[in-house]
Structures are given as structure tokens and as C-alpha cells.
Image (cartoon, rainbow, N blue to C red; front, top):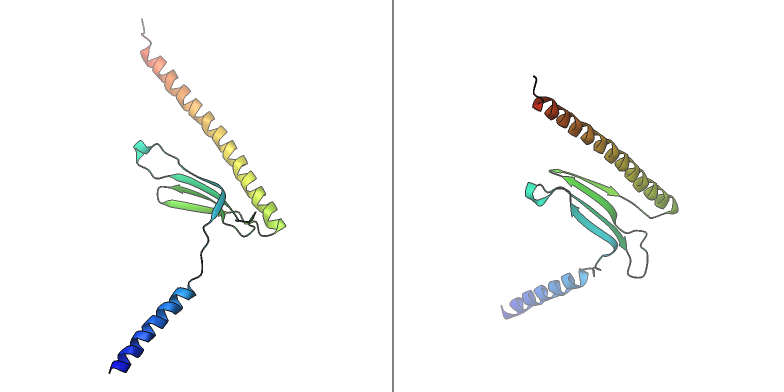
Length: 134
């Protein structure tokens, strides 16, 4: 009975040692760039945000790193990956972010123009309604 118990305890100890040795050593990710910003004022209580990061290595650039832009609005989340594994992938990733910036800049211009038109209509209507007819 004592031999069986000892063997059982030895097996438990051996399993614990194997489990401990089997765990790979994880390295902490290092980011050349990391930014998260909320898109709405905190008073709205909406959790829209943008998060972007470029991963680098401990010994220099990391072509296999995790490079992402994450945009979340309410319950929708999109993740855009920018892979740097090959020269072609790096060229495609730069073209992707350049196109995104170009489209978003044009969108912002059109949105600002539309806001100006809407605000102009409101002030024109307010002016008409305050005129006194003799």
C-alpha cells in the first residue's frame, strides 16, 4: 500500500515537472508604435475607439510582427492587418494605409462641407423666421 502511494506521488511530481518544462517561454511584445484613442466624448458613454500598433523585435525590426489598426464603433469591430513578411507585402501594406488616409481625408472634407451647408440652412431659416412683416 505504501509503495503504491509513493509511486502515485512520484507520478504526480513527474507530471508537474513535465508540465512546467513543456511551457514555452513567452517574450513580451515590444511596439515601435502603439496608440489607442476613444472616438466619442466620454459623456456619450459610447465605446467607439481606434487602436493602432506596430510591433518590433528586441533585436531590431520584426517582419513577422503584429501590425494592426483596429476601429470599433458600438458593437462593430474591424481589424486591418499590415503584414511585413516580404518586400511585396511591405509595399502592399504601405499602399493600403496610404489609400485609407487618402479616402478618410476626402471623406472628412465632404463631411465638413455638408455640415457647413446644413448649418447655413439653419441660420437662413432662423433669419427668415425672425423678420417682421410690416
